[in-house]
Length: 82
Ligand code: FES
Image (cartoon, rainbow, N blue to C red; front, side, top):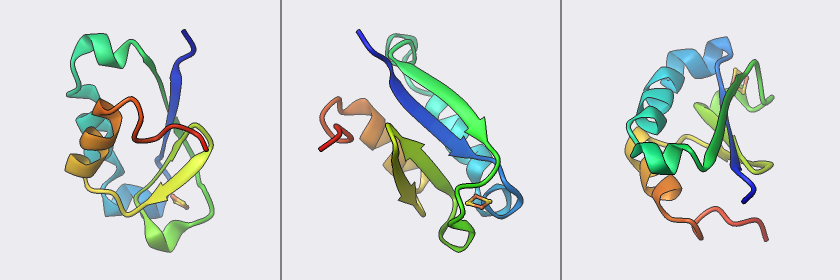
């Protein structure tokens, strides 16, 4: 099964806007769910003002709270590519 790619921006703006909290939220998911994810950090998604930014399977999502990200990643279909 292909893993869902989750890339969290750790650039300066996103860091200041809460990217570490997003990473902590992803790490709080059950281990069996985390195993289905490919989690990485990247330097900038060029949408700094809308941060914190996360790219999930190529789709950039801006301004998510940790709670919103957890809800999205709990649901297999919520971030399915169109
Ligand atoms: S620092 Fe995150 S989009 Fe630029």
